[in-house]
Amino acid sequence: MADRGQPLAAAVGAALAAEVTDLAPVPGGCIGDARRVTLADGRVVFAKSAAGLPPALLAVEAEGLRWLAAADAARIPAVLAQTADVLVLEWIEPGRPTARTDETLGRDLARLHAAGADAFGWHRDGFIGRLPQRNTPPEPSDWPGFWITRRIEPLVRMARDRGSVDERVPALVERLAARLPELAGPAEPPARVHGDLWSGNVHVDADGQPWLVDPAAYGGHREVDLAMLHLFGSPGPAFAAAYEEVHPLADGWRDRLRLWQLEPLLTHAVMFGGSYGASVRAVLDRYA
Image (cartoon, rainbow, N blue to C red):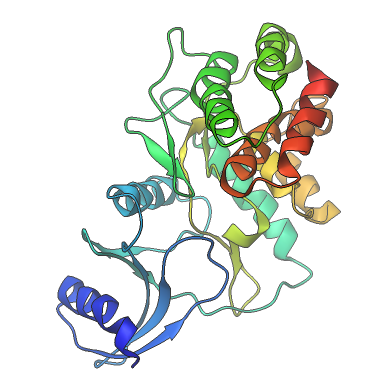
């Protein structure tokens, strides 16, 4: 194995008390070093290095995976080990979508959301990519207050500091906050959300079954997962039909997708700049 993989191999070996015989890069991740790891006993696992990541990130990811898996709803990779140096998960052999993949994803995600959460937020703060996310529930614990104060306002501050959005954005966010109770649709209880559900975080296995990976889990509005899933491409019609059979959505949910996409667009404006700032402004001009 390459010398630069030695620290990750050593971390996996220590975490599992096993000898590592091979490492292979895993494509597709936006942050960190991820590898397919073969052990001397024949097992194959997935490993993500902590090198270059915020210290608590892998611990939060591991806890989020376990929390999502506890709903017994969607397919979530099992956490095999997590240390200060590495996160080790079961290996899910990749495959291609089938005619049933979107339908299965719709049903699984609906069941996951229906499992619920104690509040809008979570018991610990987390991350989206490398960016920190505050998850402390607001008082009172309602969705509009959580989304504005824990998600949108911090991202706007970071985006302004990086020069990624124009000077009118903070004022537009204030106007959006005042209108949000009427824009957010009917009140719903907190859902158990993945939190970063773009298409790249839906891993399809060798049987065409969808698995949810790389979460930024918390208790939130279920439409945010749908919004993220529709931001960079869209699942087929079978997805929404299957979701609605299990956990019907409120009227107007499609019209609200662009509103909830403000959060990932701001996240991308902070992380990557470029045209994402203009996309942020377009959403605010539409809703604020």
